[in-house]
Length: 360
Image (cartoon, rainbow, N blue to C red; front, side):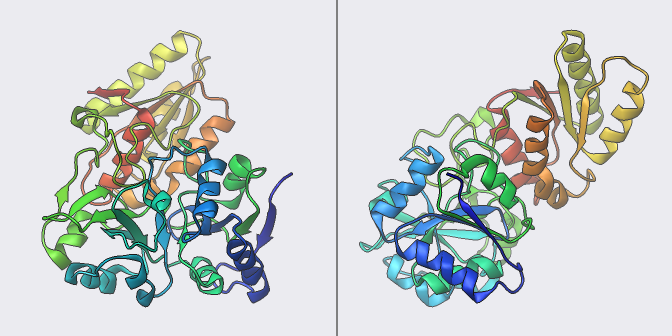
């Protein structure tokens, strides 16, 4: 049986629709809802049985922590042992928004939320639908991305329906999300604070508020760092955000990357495989010209302008899902600079590649 889908105005959701979803949360059920980053799969974060329904619906490993979502700063104190000065400063600067803070967990938070760790990850989403749902439910909502574990995260309600439609109770359709990749996760329980997962709030932005932050091993998803045995944050598992087709990521200087992408595509097409390119607008245009007269042509999918990492990140998951729908058998992806928002983009591409990285 498929989940009910309730459509709402993302800027001003109808009270009846929000109350319906909040009642599901209070009853221990699961609700998918939009945030500014991706769609989340929510349940009562203080009800351990409800939290376990999230893991079951996603097929999520029990050692992968969840994030608690709150709607007001006052909701933070009951979830943590203390609110340090840095946390208050960051909350004032970036909440509501795509920043998750990792703090010492209070006894009132079920261990299942944090995969048994003594910490808890908390954020305040900026999306009006998410904020309204949290307030109406009256509890902190635990919510990872609303997709099957390991798949590209959902940026539309249809993506949620495709992955989890028969596994959850309700989907709130608030249209496409804006940021398109999950929140930045910053661990404030260590000195210096450590970036566990890059996202919409960049290390440079964090440094302006609290000074430089460390980049935790595994946060960049570069295979030279090695795999993370026990994740301290969501999204630190080695292969994640992945399409059905194997993805090879090409990194290096732009001209060398473009040449290697061309070579790999030609080899895959020569071998008779349905090859796809996941590249910048600029390289996409060049590839379409070069392969236009050939019998065997790749599926060419553009992410956005090469110099706009935020736009490419916002499009990434939808494009990966489109390539699955197009029947791609192999995907060759262009790598980009990992400065600023590029760090989040490259984190997701490296995770999707699962170690298949070519250095041009």
